[in-house]
Amino acid sequence: MHTVLQVSDTHYFCDPGGLMFGIHSRRSLDHVLDYALNHHATAELVLATGDLVHDGSAAGYQALKEALERLEVPVHCLPGNHDNPEVMAAVLNGPRVTCNRAAELADWKIILLDTRVTGSDGGFLARSELDFLERELSSVRNRHVIIVLHHPPVQIGSLWMDDIGLANAAVFLDMIDRHAQVRAVLFGHIHQEFDRLRRGVRLLGAPSTCAQFKPHTLVHVDDPLPPGYRWLRLAGNGRFETGVARLAHPVADDDH
Image (tube, rainbow, N blue to C red; front, side, top):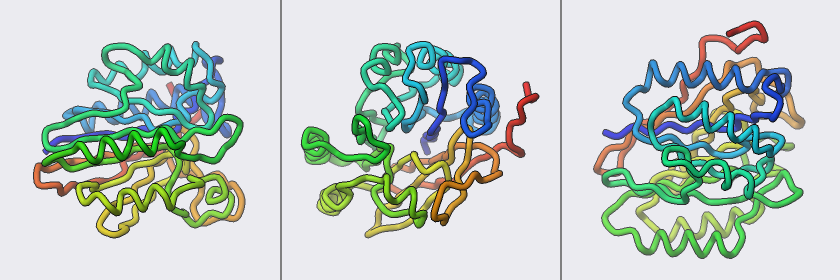
C-alpha cells in the first residue's frame, strides 16, 4: 500500500498574519501539517490542489514552499483561481516542492490538470489541457490513474459553488469514461469533504487547511468544522482506501 495526501486551499498571504474568513491561514496549515506528520508519517507523495496563495505573491509562495518542505516527501502543486501560475511556477520549482504535471507511484499514475481561468472564480479545461490529458491517458499501460484538478467536475449541491465549478465538465467526464484505468478524480475549491461514485470512478473533494464551507447552501456560509486534508492508501490492484483527517478543533488566533 502507498499513502498519498491531498492538501488544498491553503490561501497563504504575503502578510504572515493574513486571515482567510477569519482563520490565520499560515498557522492553520502548520497545525494540519503537524497532524499529518504524526498520523500519516508513511506518506510518499502530497498533492496540493490549488488556491495555494490567495494574493498570488512570491513571498506567499516562498513561505508555503518552506512549510510544505517539512513533510520531506515530493509535493506536486497545481494552481487554483486565486493563484498566479507564473509566480507559482517560478517559486515552487525545488527538488521537493514542484509544479510537475504527473507522478508515478508503483502501479499508479497521477495526472495534474490546470483549470484556472484568468479573472474568473470558475474553472475551464483549455484545449491544451484536454489534449495533454488524452495523451497521458492513452500512454498509460498497466497502471491505475488518479486525475487531480482544482475545480469540481460535478455539482456538489451548493448553488453558489456550483456556479463556479468546472464549466466544461461534460467534456472532461466523457474523456475519463473512455479510459477504464481511471480510478479517482481529486479536487479542491469547495473547502469541504465530498465523495461520490460515478461510473466506477470516485470523485473526491477535500477540506481546506484553513476555512471550511458549509455543504448544501445557496450562498457562502462558513462551517465551524476544523481544517484537514484527504488521505489515500493505494493498492497495486487498483483499489484504494480514502478518508478525511481533521484537527480536533479549529485553529484559534492564539494557537501557536
